[in-house]
Length: 241
Image (cartoon, rainbow, N blue to C red; front, side, top):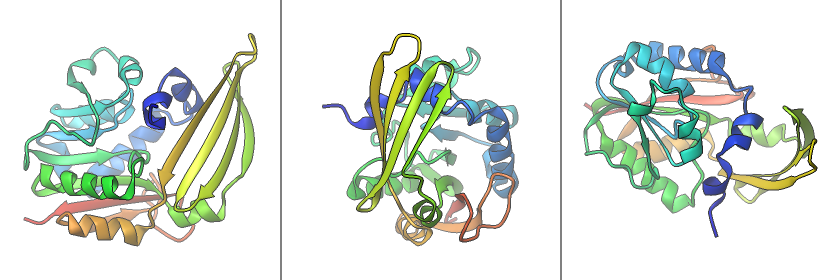
């Protein structure tokens, strides 16, 4: 049986999250470049890059930025000029040498998909891949705010598809079940997401174990300070020199 992340990231995912657009990506990348100038030079990996909306903006500044994603479909949606800079693969088996990267970016919460032990192993691996002084950009949801403001159910319609989403906290994971119905044919499909909810202290502890220290943190893509009610936890983590 396929894991949820092997089955979900396709054209329907791109449709449902179309509001996460190029303008949002521009603000996120520009913020990261201000906080971590290291991202402007040397090899930088956009991990779980999808169709490359962040990578395309990063490469305007850093022409050796590259991306990797598991989804063949999302990679196929990337602009033609990005495709030579894209790899397909599982982030649990990164084909990069230790100490090779000046930066790694994890945009829009592509962390926490796996078991606790696998997530910890992934963080350790990310630390190994960075050169001394390299940075990890961790764009993650604010777990406390997510738990406090969770909407159990809602319905949206986008481009002829009705999506009913049901959310719940199951132990330490945020689980979302989605029922997608095409309004023209009535065809239905079920999809899900399941992400481990790590609080900021948990992320920092994992990062510390991987040889990374928190340089800076923000709560929005516009650069506001992180607070209890911030929508995001955007951490810039630096490997010791």
